[in-house]
Length: 477
Image (cartoon, rainbow, N blue to C red):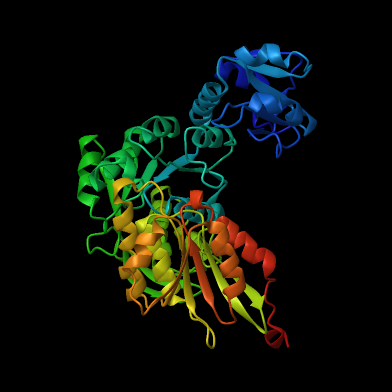
């Protein structure tokens, strides 16, 4: 059997003790009792809202091979006659298993951070590295104090490339995570005013992102956005840590992985990439200049980990946007169709501007409208009113004449838009959802975007539930 971990290795790595008759090994690791697979280990992590120990019975019923539980909760689990590994603290034990996973791995390890584009770049790396070997990458946005160790602990021994997303909301959060990951390559996608409420300045955000350099292995590589205003600061920070291999991507003339030309449409992109004097034409199966910029970083990293660049470029042609990050749906309404651009996963000022620019490239049909459906950007603190009202500039520059809004902070945007823009405002997401469902018309293009906590994913879900996928019968004929 090809185990992810033998139980003996787990016990040794986690400093645990066996309880009951343990299986020889496990096939996977889960922290969700509902979706656990047969033969996997269930780690009963105590979170902010729920304690995994309360779902131990469900995990076993759903096929868990063993439980990893804390010593303090063991008396309450006495009625369960199931195999367990008992540890001092489950999350800490998962962290120790993650460290052991990294120590035993011979993979090329990549850490991805930045204010915008982390998940897109991580998924792009998964896509372009796959033709060159087995890739293990973070699921969704598993980039925090439990997501990173969980992803590391899940990394199979035969992995060729490990890609890890690293996020933060406060200073000091990246440092312990990257010291677990110990990447060969660390990339900072860009620095933007995200989580401004927790920082005094953009430079403080850059300093927090620069913590990713501290875990880099000796002789490792740093990849930076040369077009970012914080490039010089990040470069100096890396140099101060003794890092010699510093690379850059972007349109800047001195960028090592340089965007020579970009040509975008509403469904795809084409770019010309220059590396070491050679120019490569790259077709991407997803639209948006920000996607092209992420591709520069990804293809640059391909060369640094000695993967096949030609195969990576070919793979980009089949890239599709992730759910909530630009995925498009053509849906039936009335006697025609409309297009939904799902950007609902998260938002900050930089990603809002990118999404608005993406909407500007989308062509409505007939008498259709380009409609920006926008909700609050969270964690902006004292800057909230300004960053929301400032979105009026990009909207006007993009020629967006229909803006539908929800959230208390979006009032600032409503008040900053001129009468030439048709604005619909609702205080609550649910109220705006009803308006959207009743107002969309044939030919429209809707782009939906907000911070995750505002719940605009519900608007997308309601649209997809109400309107069926459009089938072009004329094209089929």
